[in-house]
Each structure stands twice: as structure tokens, then as C-alpha cells.
Length: 534
Image (cartoon, rainbow, N blue to C red; front, side, top):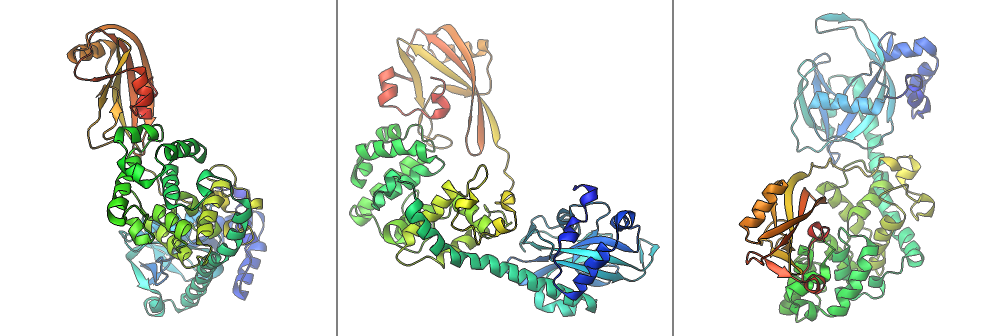
């Protein structure tokens, strides 16, 4: 909640857009001290209220409730009753009255300030005298595909209504012009957001051509090199990738080399990058390129998308950078950049939001500079419009038309959907050593780290006695428990909490493969989750 002494600042800052709003603001400013505070708590003839005008993403429908007092479909809202975060109050009222679970602001600014008369009526059997509402209106977007339910004590229906039918469904004629006024303002805001896309190419391409970092994979536009770099850069920092990229191309300089490489060697080259299916899909796609295209990398977006492990982002990057196709590559960096430039409060990780951004970018791709435009968006997100810490707005080529910069809302964006809690799994890990060799085994073909080498392990947390008993059951003949340690590892959706036992053994059981230090260093890729125990 905002400081009560500052609660009126939003009204004081409001810039009236018509004569009636001038009067509403003037009325507020004429009140001071207790007279002003009384408006906040329904203790004066004029009460402070908030309302929400809610539309579908395509602006074809508005979400309204059938209000039992007014016997009409109308917007949602209510008295603030001491709450001073007006935007949040209007949102919570809208959720309570409609049952909507997905509701996000079109803008965080108040869109209208109105002084609305309220006739005498009864509420819950009690007489309410005639009074007025000094009402602040906020604009929200609500997807239609969600469950709705009216608030029983106030409303008898809730529905998405065609905007063109407002005059028919709204039985309060004086409210229709207000709805139409606010809808017009909402459309203007939507159009302004959309117009920012057209400003991007000229600003970003010129900036990129002198500001781009010198990265190994930017030395040429060879599709194999761009493809490899984009796969490596998924979930991995640029600085960490540089060494892997150079070593990989030194060992496997062509697509044919990649297609024919032994999987163990491939995984060893990938060791430490994680997400090992990326490497397997590289090899699988290389074989597809040999079989389908005679070893020449395909040139169309559709053909590139048909290769294993290549989704819309990677296909867009390759198609635009290597073949000048107007195909965006939209990842987290680009979503953050566009969310801020367009001041989009919809969750940036929602598929429909990503689709909107992708389609809007595709419509403005500059012929002859598609590759530079794709990379400029990537570069802007990586070096200026930063994910952690304050963005470097003074260095941004979009500073003059960035709506978040203009409205001081950068810290609020991007909005992301709430993350699901990771599933925690307890494991007991064994480091069996025998005659300078270490016990390894291969994981199954499915699930986390499928097909990779691992240290022997079991589910759950064993105490020392149970760990030695497990070692005996595996036939390694333990001679000494050398050490116990605790480690953890986080995957995307799972978190491993691991207890590790270092046990000296007297027998190389056939249950495991026994690797020398040289084997571990040169031939066998051990995932980071287990490598941290070495």
C-alpha cells in the first residue's frame, strides 16, 4: 500500500483530456486535509472509486458484469476504502467480480478521471443515499479462453460482449460515452505500441554495424558455424561457449565430420555444456543434411525447421543471418527488449505474446539487412537492455521511442508467468575407487541425462551404514569409507540433493565400468551433476 499521505498524487499528476475531467480534477484539488481523506473512506459526499475496462487481446470484445443494482452490464470496480494503490485495487476488484485468472494492464497509467453521479439505492437491504464517485479508470487485457464467474452478492452475470453492442447491452445511457472514450484511448495506446516495431530496423541496424561485439561465429555466415553457435548458446553464456566452439570446429570442421563422429567423442567435446540432447540432435541433423541435401545446408526456413533439434528460434537465426530471409529469431533476450520498447505487460513467455512479437517483427524486416537486424536484436538484449541489473538506456538506439523508458516502467518489465516449483529429488552417489580406477555406469535411454555416463547412485538419502551395505550388494568389496559430502544440482524442472560417499574398494565388480584418470579426461563425458564430486 502506498503512503496514505501520498495517496492523491496519482490524481494530482493526471493530465485531464476533456472538460469533464478538468472539472473532476479541480474538485479533487479543491479539497485538502481531512476533507480529502474522507473521500478515501466513503465519509464524504464524493467517494474515491476505481474501475477497470477490460478487453480481449484483439480488442473485439469487452469483459463486463451484469450489475444487480444498476440492472445493466457495466465495467468492474469499487470503492477504494483506504487502499491507495489504485491500479492494483482495480485489478483485484476485476478478478473478484469476473473470476478471471489472467488479467494484465494495457498500461499502468490511469486512462480517465470522471465524476459520476450515483442515485439513491438499496444495497444488501440497506438504503444508500445519493452521492458521487470520483472514479479512476484503468485498462486491462483478458484472454477469452478462461473460466469466468460473477460475484454472487453484486452481479448475476459476466461475459465477453461485442464492443459494437455496448449501446444495446448497457442500460445506463450516460455510461456509454465514457466507455467509448476510454476504448478510443486504449486503441490509441495499442496503435502506439504497434507503431514502435516499424522504428526498430533503421535504429538498430545502424547501431549494430558499429557496436557489435567481435564474436568467433560472426566472422562469416557459414550456416554450419551459425547453427553450431546458436545451439551452443542455448542456456549458456557467451564467454563459456567461445572455447567449446573453437575446439568443436577444430575436431569436426565439416557437417560430414559431425555426422560420422562417434557419440562418445561427441559427448566428450560437449562435456560441461549440459543439455546433452543438443549435441545428439546436432549429429542427427547432420546425418539428415547428408541424406536429404547431399551435405549442403538447406536454405529455406521450412527445410531448416525440419532438421532435428531446430526450433523456430534457431531456424529464424540461420535463415535470416545466412540466407537473408525475413524470419525473426525470438528468444528471451528479444522478448525482454520488445516487452520494454512496446511497454507490454502481458507475460512475455506466453506463446500468444511470443507469436505477436514474432509476427510484428517479421512484418518490418529490412530487405538486404535481415541478418544484421536479427543480430541487432540479440545484441541489444545481451549488452544494453540487460536481464540482470539496470539497462544501459543512454546507450540504446531505441531510447527515443522506448515506451517503458518514456513512462519509467523499465523495472516492471518484462512480466513473466509464475514459475512452477522444481521437483526435489534426493540421491545417494558413490565414488568407488579400486586400483586407481573409478566406477562408472551408463544411464538409461530416457529421462534426465539419458544415455550419459554417471557415478553409481540410488534414490533417497542413505546413512553411512546403509551406503556400505549397498556397496557390498553391488559386489565391490568396500575396505574403507573415506569421506562423505553433500552436493546439489539444478535442472530446469528438477533439483537433485545428493549425498556422496567416497569408498575404497577391493574388487572391480562387473556391475560397473572402471575408468582410469586418463579415460575420464579424454574419453568419457561425465555430466556436471556428477563431475562436481571428482
